[in-house]
Length: 450
Image (tube, rainbow, N blue to C red):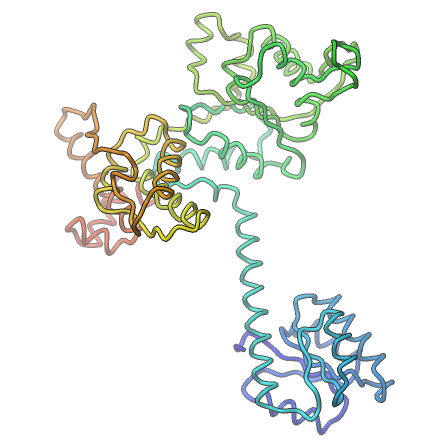
């Protein structure tokens, strides 16, 4: 059962108390002989397993006090495993106790070996459930867990997210299609003070222009044919929370003016309405467009650009994220192999080389789709280059300066070794042909060990 798992014996018969304590020799045992003492011991020691005799004073001949004690124990510590002690052939009360939430029961007379085994199983289950709760808490407290990255480029992005999340400023996220802008927005939201409200998203490029205004601002009943009831827009639905305007670069100019007015005045008017409705939202925008060029060409309002751009996060494309392609590929393989029930365990060395050297024009989304397709089509336990439908692609635009070439090669080799060895320093140093202290110095030099 483990030294970290205390056991509480609730029993009023001194002889049976001693017998039970002897059954649990080697465990930390505490004892109580009535309900009040049992609840005090429960609060003080937080045992993971309780043995409870239903016949407690002032009703030692009955079971009423025992059942009240059981209910109060489970109310105070619902995860505690309670093993109920019943009389011989007293199945009805045993089943009633199980129905109330007891873990198990055993009948008098006590069999020490059986009882010890039962307590061990109960303690093991308690610990497993506790570990699962801790893991779930860690997941819920780590919104950036959804962002799989180890490169220094992405670590800088993560730091920006952590700094900007608590500050209520309009944030513009820039990056090529498929770089994972949505993941960052969700992290920004979960780390913000608005995380208990709603995150409402709308893709400005995915909705026809004639529908986009009513989607954003809502409409009054009778505003147009088919408007049979007043409907709230995305901005109003997000009140108190965060509004994510994806592909803001594709927002038509007339709606840019209306959005600018909302950002300045923080009020909206529904389509067909005349009432100004105050709305409190934090606005986050994202685009793969070059908004500076759009402003220069007159396709995007300059005043709106500065209004949505109080803070900027630039996401680098996957080809510029050292080592992240292999890291992501391994994570996707693990996820999809489980999802599709396929016995795929990893990649061939040639596949890893191809993943690393390919330019990934579609970024993380393309990588995810290729891995998913490869797992569906793969016949063996490893994914090969053919499964990914990739060829090795040499990286272009390498610097000509020898020092830059050397440093770039060193940095890439280190990042690659760390990816291929899942961050194991000893194995990475062995692959690179250097000592561990040398590798640590290089990690420091290139900012890869931060």
